[in-house]
Image 1 (cartoon, rainbow, N blue to C red):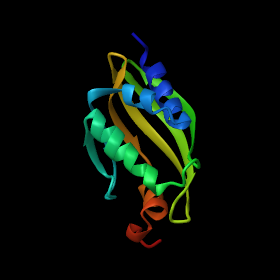
Image 2: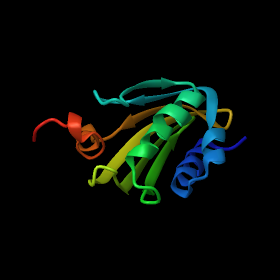
Image 3: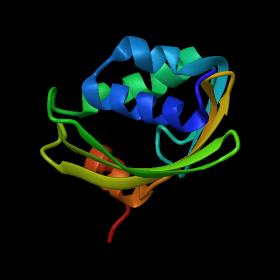
Length: 137
């Protein structure tokens, strides 16, 4: 069995590298991903297909192809839980720059990600990716 930290690092690297097969294989079938806030993407995404196809896949059309850069800054592991910090940078189709620092608490079960709770600057997400919904500064 693969240790939880390795599972999370492999997943983040697969996102960074555009390795869709490894991204999909990283999640359990019944995985959940909690994304905070009141954005169109804010909810608890339930199931691997919803996470991959609807949540993560739904971000693609908002970004200029080939502009996404992901950097894993670090991880802390306790048992089956891994806290990971990363940066995400990209140009958006709205002409803005998405540059966010994110953290997530990943729970790994049997070598796959079973749940993620993400913490991020949702105000920046709104301004960069959903400019029509951004709150005034």
